[in-house]
Length: 361
Image (cartoon, rainbow, N blue to C red):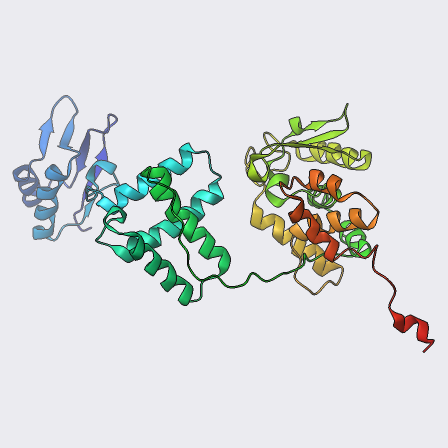
């Protein structure tokens, strides 16, 4: 059997116990020369758990052609290079976003956009640029074909750095903007919603879909719910920290309350009302979107379906039932009535009949 040298961490993780064939005089002599020492109290050969101590042993084993087994130890890892000025700046930028209590999604979006801005101008730092350089960068990205939504994110991310992180005066960056398309929200017919819910047998999945449609909740709002957000005495559901950090109370239908109770008894969540594989962690966003997609496929809906379409359907169906647009605005948690008015473009309750019907064809 070929000789081999093995290093095992001691209990205090400050050193290695060195194991090797004691009868092999050449290996023993090479290890002793490389710094391995016999400790009578430990009844074995020891070596400090440092890169400097392991390096001579590694060289000796390579010279002898003897395998050396070294465990993964953080102390032996190569020290990372010091952060660059751009990395330090990006870290400070992200810290400001966290301290401002922006959402994790905003942090992700702003960080990605600002990182591209930093990388494009490296090795120059942002404070070394003038306003024209920023405008040239934005115009170049627009010419490259970025979407209007990403263009706004890019401008907001850059403005956040100069105005919030560095405390400079507010700036307006005038760059060409494409005309925003007037797209209507995609909605489901009531019959489709009924079939979608009836075709979902899993209790947890059905409860999440019913919340999205029955109360018009956003995906993140569904997943952030906790058992304490249900007030059965007032028959209300509390949505805390919705979009724009706004809270709102929503009327809870009795049928939905009974379903949520049954879901709770079956799955016994620890923290969130809907949890994934690990107790205490919320159900995954992608998993919930997959639930909606599979439910739609089961009932034969071929067009793309998302959870947010249930929220759109909730608002549209309320409008078709004669509910005031102001009440719908409050239920959805919209800051501006203009956001809610988009549902008037898809609601069918006030549409006149086509003159085609009067031709008797």
